Length: 345
Image 1 (cartoon, helix red, strand yellow):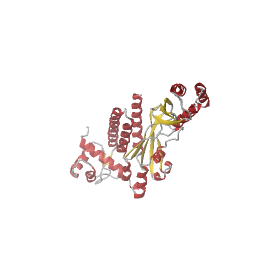
Image 2 (spheres, helix red, strand yellow):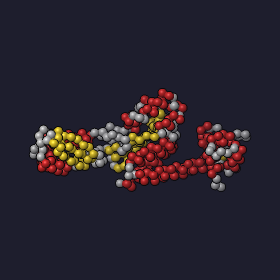
Image 3 (spheres, helix red, strand yellow):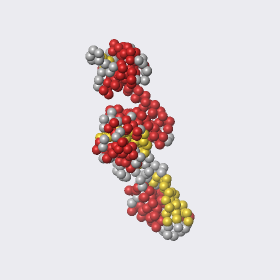
């Protein structure tokens, strides 16, 4: 027999309450916690039906009910179906917005915060390495050149280069040609002395300009990106008594405003270090190595847009967080994100 919506909601309420308290659940308790607006007598009748159907049992006379194995199975199956539906709905929304990565990542942060009831943080994509895509040198006046450097992540950097002697337009054209044919596709580690010497030999003169341009290109490639961070559900922390102490809560909530601290929480690497492991990581208390997190746990995962382009997702809650739910939700979400980004390549 398929349960109607009312019986199903009552069964779910019985199971959730029993999981929280470990005590048999009575009709009066359920009447306080469900959104059915039913009297204890009506709930009592529905619970009797659920008992006859084998979904709940009464361990002792005059005691409340507890879930049976059959009840647990229905609860888990229903929960998994709902979870799959949630993730699928999220995927459809993400696919609609996949043209704008910031919208996608903000949506991910909000989804996880609402779904887990914890605080969430998502970093914008980071490039494991940067390469030169295009360089444009333009003469501004007799003492200055403008270098426009486009990287392979389509980030554009503008830098002024002061020169000791004027450079005519013919030399600017030659400089642009040689820079692009020599440096295109290289990262900072590949721009070595041999490459620089080759450029100087081909240019023949104005070697000081080559040195200045190479210096600017090198700085641009190693410069840290202003990495975006998307957060949601920070105030969920206040729902947990062990974290809601005024001083402790202020420290945790304040940390959500500090990008450097969030970088540390998410385990973002120093430049040039490989941190693209896809594994979900769990950090408990002092393992986070952040003082304000000593009473918290964090679960992190890595999403990938393409090879060498990745970001981090972090979920923060009390040490007694529901690890199974958090890890399961992250696994499902990561699979969906991987599929979406794969389709968009």
